[in-house]
Length: 380
Image 1 (tube, rainbow, N blue to C red):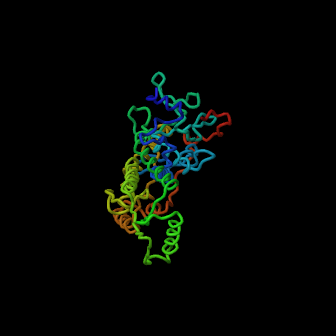
Image 2: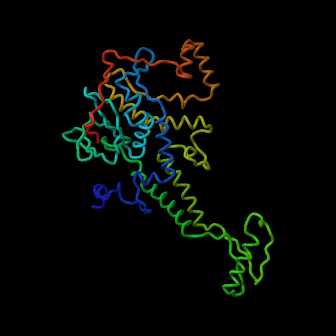
Image 3: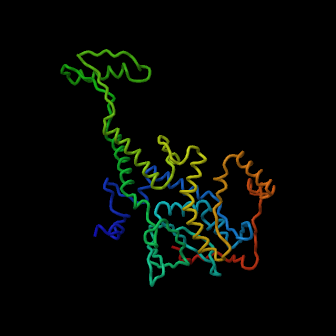
């Protein structure tokens, strides 16, 4: 049945081709420059932020770095850096609406490593009410796979932004292909020489060569043209359909910026005004609040709920680097807060260059470091 998702999955496709013609899936969509720029912008921005584990206590929070949690605040696995891992996970979320992380455990049965799983290889369903994951013909349970879904309509999996915007992205791909074929197979004339007399092929060639020799190139610009054979020069402008083609490409780029909720100027669209505020700082804050924060909250919540099993601990991305503003504004705030007794000198220095030392503990309940998973891991 060509209307079913299974039909297209067996055909190796995420769904039917767009009406405009191109097949749209998360790989083909990434060939469209606006999609690639938007996904990279979100994933790399989140990936570069520090991710810490904190303990709630009293009036302030305290960062703790227990060896047993190093796969969260430090390196998640032997092959990937912290930034590479989290930008991969967030990229999966943004592009497909879901991210899956395999939880590799040590001999003590505690999570020791995190590994990203290709979302295309995962099927999610329920068995007797329990959420399970089908990967490579095997079944994995919720204590083996950490699932981070995006916006969902069924409470089980997130909706794929690429799937929801298939036609918009398909049109962008089609216009891009049209432009590429136009330059590969077609030509554009800047003008034509019209003659009232019938010219032989030799005369037409001679007239063309004489014109190019006299007027082609920067040195011959603005020379006066003299034509014989009752010939006249007629300039050719951009055909209306070509002008519409350029407008379509620009509009589709804006559609994609709208899809991923990124300011157009952040993906290189600088010829349109933005309603995100007038200043760069204000637009950056809007991007953080309305675009990055929802994705970061999903990741933080998943870690806090399913990986940090102690109630008073939680995960947080550090946004200070993105929200710091100008040096003058920061120091004006510090001066006021120090006068009020809210911040001490040491705390201000720590906020500026992180002189503070997070708690390193091997106390009871904190150290669960064990041997690394053996080679026989059934990681997908």
